[in-house]
Image (cartoon, rainbow, N blue to C red):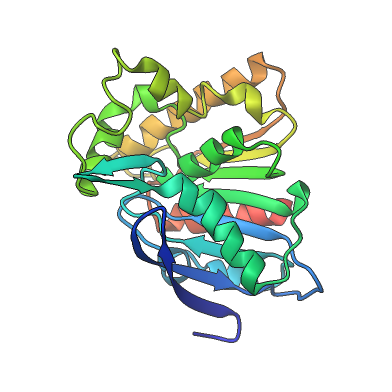
Amino acid sequence: LSPRLREFFLYSPALGRTVGVRVLLPGIPAEVSPVIHLFHGGGDDFRSWTDFGSAEELTLDSPYLVVMPDGGAGTYSRLAVGSKVHDWPRFHTEEIPAFLKANFSVDWAPASQLVAGLSMGGYGAMKYAAWHPDRYGSAAAFSSPLDPLSTVPAFDIIAMREGARSLSLFGDPALDRSEWLANSPYALAENLRGLDLWFSAGSGSLEGAKDRDLLESMISSQGERFSARLNSLGIRHSWFPRTSGLHNWTSWERELGAWLKTL
């Protein structure tokens, strides 16, 4: 699609269908390249980071190969839809690495494997890092819900958008609490020790504006709790509560650029 941007369509056994993936070649080529696994949010797709988030421009002077796989409605979880199971974690953490190994020259050292995303994509990034702390060196989340038990309706809506039944994603939050905790970056925070952690959220308002973005405000409060949880565990991290910012691409483009500069 451009000198650096490629688009692929892969058959995924984990999903039982063909899905799209975009890949940005490194702006600074090398014999082997570190990788950023960059995830989209709910309601978007594998094209969104390059179509709306300036990912190609922001990574022009970086050494990273950036892989942007589809994430469906955005659960970043195993999801029963009718008689089928959509296993998004298997697709993202097993099939995408296999695709990269077959097609690109990649550095597989954990320090060279970074995972990041916006909104639900940032949730997926932090969860995958907590599940596989030996595989990733860095995790970043922009405007992301990191404590699913405090956001049950949002997770339920996203699952139903993919065709699942209500409360079928992790089950009933009271009766199936262990399943919710097993999919919660907040609950799994201890596993993130030693990783380079970066997360941010806007205030839910813009300077001089009276209206508030309640979703972004809620996510910012989750970020505060997640930061406090990491502090209680003595886990170093970078938390950036912005004084302005809504749940939109203006914020996420800003945050991707800010995170990339720290790298």
